[in-house]
Picture 1 (cartoon, helix red, strand yellow):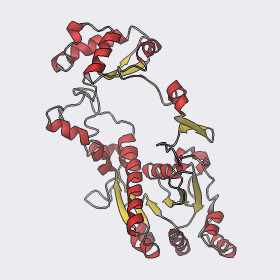
Picture 2 (cartoon, helix red, strand yellow):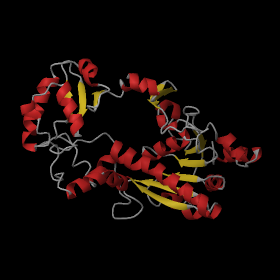
Picture 3 (cartoon, one colour):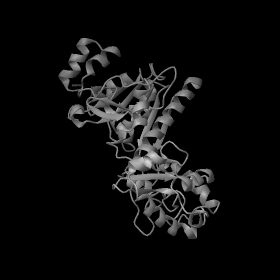
Amino acid sequence: MGPLNGFTVIELAGIGPAPMGGMILADMGAEVIRIERASGPDPLGMKDVSFRGKKSVVLNLKDPAGVEVLLRMVENADVLIDPYRPGVCEKLGIGPEQCHARNPRLVFARMTGWGQDGPLAKAAGHDINYISLTGALYATGRAGEKPVPPLNVVGDMGGGGMLLVNGVLAALLETGNSGKGQVIDVAMVDGAAQLMWMFHGFEALGMWDGQRRGVNMLDGGAPYYDSYECADGQYISIGSIEPQFYALLMQLAELPEDTFAAQNDQSRWPEQKQRLTEIFKQKTQAEWCEIMEGTDVCFAPVLSFLDAPSHPANVERQTYIEVDGITQPAPAPRFSRTPSEVRHGAHDLGQDTESVLSEMGFGEQEIAQLRESGATA
């Protein structure tokens, strides 16, 4: 059983980072109960990996009886994840004030893009907007070209889902000491800003040009930190930052000393990059893997996420698993004594309504009445 075995998390149905956070908590052993609408999307048909390990309860939160059911569930919970815009839970009658009146120990985790306050708090947004406001998008892309969205992993997932889990775990630790709950304001814009921490330091040291993209050490500007096309049209990645790793790159790729000796002379970078482009195109990806993979060059083949699960390193570490016929990342991180696991795949909409309510003290007749009235389904 995972390290969060015994904890109960109520996740109000949402998309993106909030479900991701709930998935990770479920992987770690928490009982995560997803509250959905009767008209909500079919969990089995959506093929949404974040549904794994969660129970599905249908409630009508626009019905006072449905609201009362949720508040009674809160009495038995440790965490509630709110994925709505600021003020929505308050309008429904399930905001922090109402929930803490029922359970003062509850961790009320609010997941939004812009945060609970400020001029943009109630505006719509997506990952690309949050990373735009923090400099992350501006810094991503090739020199002389427009910014390139790095999927939605920086704002939504790294700045949102991961920050949500971090906040929930910290709050649970504090509740264990104080016996009191609290509200967590998790904003994707804040998380994206935190992910940019290193570049603020680099800029202050004069090691980074924050007004230009594609010309710095880690943004594809440096020849020794980039991806290159091979003879077969596949790509490899090189990250030979440290001098000893760079020296090994020069040795294994047979780079000429006169061109490559000055590793950090930026005036030589265009020439070095052109030469590396020519050199790496002389062999296939597999041939370069044979020469460099597993060495201190800091090398890896560039794989699609469809090919990644079959790479020998990922196979040996069991980095990927299959659930409901879908290949997906395995739980992480790995615990030596209380390992995480995926207990089951997605449950059907409302599959657990009756069993969850029964476990939380609702009687059979009461559950039947709630179904009949439309408060549950």
